[in-house]
Figure 1 (cartoon, rainbow, N blue to C red):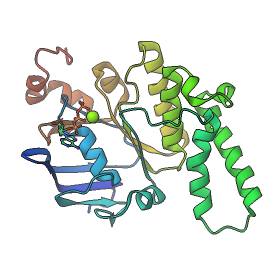
Figure 2 (figure 1 turned 90 degrees about the horizontal axis):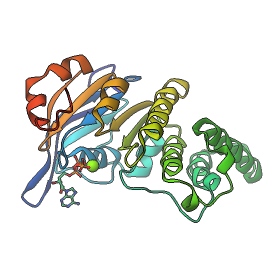
Figure 3 (figure 1 turned 135 degrees about the vertical axis):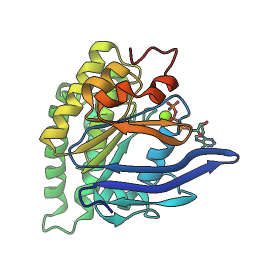
Figure 4 (figure 1 turned 120 degrees about the horizontal axis):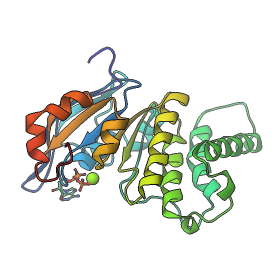
Length: 254
Ligand SMILES: Nc1ncnc2c1ncn2[C@@H]1O[C@H](COP(=O)(O)OP(=O)(O)OP(=O)(O)O)[C@@H](O)[C@H]1O
Ligand SMILES: [Mg+2]
């Protein structure tokens, strides 16, 4: 276990039948470093997030969070320890209001601590906190709207709000800007940067837009066929020959 690591993954493997979706991944995420996980479709990025956050059990390997092994810990216990995520496909509750969508994870966090507050006080506290999150993500004006009725761009912002509601130390975002216009994309990604500083949350994002990846991230992990092909700061990844070969034809790194 590296002393400075927030998350450390060793020899992680997951097969689906014959397919090695995650095939011996070694990965270390350090606090405050915004990491982008990139790689072609099917590289194993989402599977890796599913393993780390507890949605899937690995066939082998170990996962450590804040120095403690969490390999077999249930998802909600990982969330409690400060590890959260958003989903590649939208995961909001369409019939609940925007505010309620954020309130659910906030209440679940406040509710599990044995605290001296009465239920009502706790609900008031949770509501204030959910309002604060909506203000931070710029959705205060939409608090009473059904989440299913707001724009796609606002829904992605809401997902971000839900992912930070558990006040995580480490938050995985699986394609947070998917389906957004370039302008919306910039808004979401600037917001992630700002939240990482203001909330002291370390983000690891999966992202396909290379302009975004190279301008936003401090560190890039390149996956291919279930393995980490390369990792390093953007300047080095841009020059990496193997990485360029994987992306050949997409001229993404041009
Ligand atoms: N539940 C599953 N059952 C069977 N195969 C799966 C399952 N989940 C993922 N796979 C396969 O595992 C491989 C890795 O998938 P994964 O979703 O992790 O890739 P990804 O890097 O997130 O891709 P994308 O960029 O398209 O989201 C793919 O070949 C995928 O088809
Ligand atoms: Mg994916």
